[in-house]
Length: 158
Ligand code: ZN
Image (cartoon, rainbow, N blue to C red; front, side):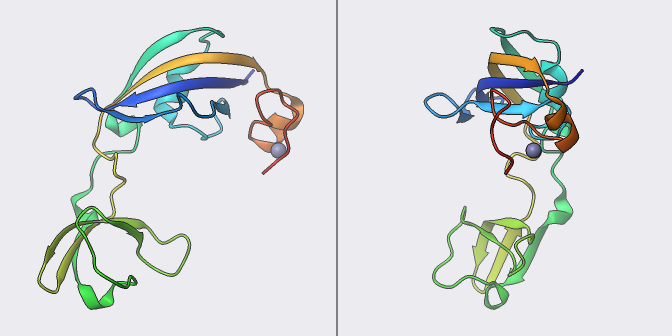
């Protein structure tokens, strides 16, 4: 039976740099197998009981995927949907459509801008330090909806 799991985490890259953490913020609650968290982490937390503290290594291909060189493209500054001055490292949505990919500016040379549509964590092997603060059986409603209804199962749907 899938569980609903609540946890805190700190995410590090291979050099040990902290990329993200839930410490001091809200914990994460998810239904196992629902795709709420990356699959590689979901798989490795299966059956870990409440109170577990684990260090979980998730290779890039099971996290945000390998980098795809075809996702890096050079375009003319004039065609971009952003006003004002661009800076290397800036991220924006590459179109009006809300499903348009988010791209990162990786280089600016004259009128040419090089954009990278890979996820910023593509190609990065991730290490999660996880503390499971709660785990319970999913409710019938949660299983039917395919998502958790909060840590205690009584939360409202999004
Ligand atoms: Zn629901």
